[in-house]
Image (tube, rainbow, N blue to C red; front, side):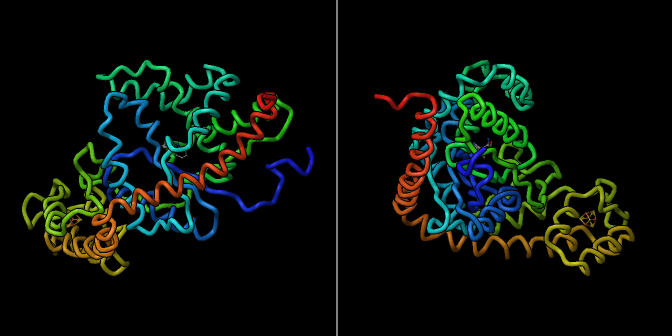
Length: 340
Ligand code: TRP
Ligand code: SF4
């Protein structure tokens, strides 16, 4: 290949990631994604977008999704330090080039590649009350591939559940470049940076739908109450019963929030029944409240002025379109679609 090969050019890599517009975010999003997104924006050119079309693949009947959910989610991005001056924040549907690339990639992508993506059958089984035998749902990972490839993103920070989608993206790019004999699309890599894993209040994955989450902008009293009433090791029925931190979700919070000394205090105090669960939870409550307070403060001006948030999203969309448009020109050219 020649100097034009995008894989071989030592251009600084671009970073892209997206989230479906689920509304207000929780501590799991913060520790698992947003902290990392904020860190990356000082090192790379970053594109962070709201995947509203992806939300439609499973919630196609729910048009309420898009009003407040988008603004609420972006307020949380901004309040946790995503800076619209460093990163382009935008709405997927404001960049219709994603849909065009998705369509063109659908010509060369075998159905079997999509059918074997693990999330396809898993989600269909999980959301079994809903008809997901749709064309759009099958195409979910291909639309995601278009999202990534249209920006020439080298890195895609995502959780482990999305690794198969990034792998598919690489295969799609390789096939496209091979078929049209030009290295137009960049093969991305998933960026599984070591993120802190914060479980939900019950020890399962934190998720709004499991009712085990703490929202980033939740009122302090509510946060305190949720942690105070968190389940603990079921063996500690009475204060005098010893417990095992490894069987307790509160311990997992200590692992994220507490220093060595406090963790030692917990392990010894729990095993010897020297401390009660209420004592044990106190430092966690303080640490979580301390972490959330600046986020709540930073969110306030945006809550008071949602039009500013909308303006940020519109402006980010314009920047995104410039990059996406440039890729589409190359894609159309190699496919012979630029002759008219
Ligand atoms: N599928 C991702 C999720 O559910 C969201 C997403 C859509 C995405 N397009 C993307 C993530 C492109 C990274 C890159 O979390
Ligand atoms: Fe859990 Fe702490 Fe109670 Fe032990 S003392 S069971 S770690 S809350």
